[in-house]
Length: 425
Image 1 (cartoon, rainbow, N blue to C red):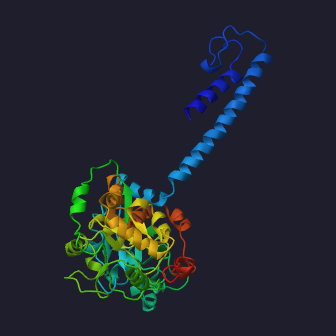
Image 2 (cartoon, rainbow, N blue to C red):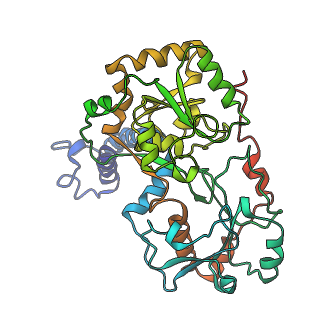
Image 3 (cartoon, rainbow, N blue to C red):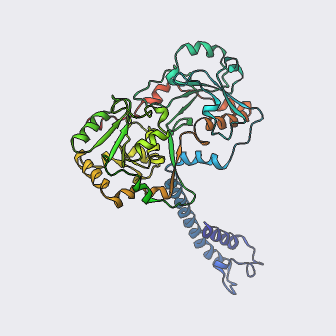
């Protein structure tokens, strides 16, 4: 870029300086000592300079485009991360979110969902129906949505207030219930959602850290089977239970916990995935079978992130691409579809489990990356608060221009999002 600027400056100087000053003010790059040649000679010099500068400009633009493209593979996540460094200015009026539904029949409160938000002093959630008319957004949790809510809120609807559909379930297990053109914003685990609400994420550290690999290895109980899992849904559309049985038949020893295995000590249930009892249960194992209940775009739940963050085990997944598309380091996990057969996969897992150096290679990523848990100041409700605060500062004309609705939010959620054939094949 600097070479281009120097060249461009030199070209402009040669091309546009007047005859009386050209001997004293020539660009250093193209200086011609004592040059008193004709104007034709000067223009002959300037033309190749112009062509050279033009070529340099094209090369510079190509370099910038390639660099931007390669560094933007996961730009959505990095844009979200900017919120950590550039706090939103508090709005003139506090932001209020009206929760029109429960969350799996549980209360939706500021204490639960905004506790990690830097915006919690000026953003809140209310379940009081009297707040409907003054709310900045109306929130619906999809699993708790039914058509009766349309009668409660639609008749009082302000077209300037976005209706937000919130869901953390995969499309293979959850039909989006609202009718066409009812929802304005989506808040889901998908990066394409209006508000990104993942179960966790992995970010590059600002500075590398020292990892105690000996501590990781010593935390593993060599007398236990190499792998384990905790799950309560014994039927899954992607056939993960079939795959687990197949791996066991081929020689992989697995300790299964939860409703589909042995009952763990007070650790079963999604609400307890990050609890100390689960950490204590899983950490002695080297591998965790982090098979989701469906193979869908961006659908990676807390079982994967907590395995990395708090349990210090290596996740084994079904499909590598889903995880790498989220910017997760390829060396942080094993994927069954890396292998020609499940037999090869079992052999490799057992080999790594008995190889200290080989196993610890799957923890090297910890030096340069960190796991961010689900509740943080960047995504989910915290991001919803920021977006609403920014929107409140727009002019009425700009707010009207920014309005949108989903003609079919079910199509957006479902179409071409899942491939659950792997385990069966």
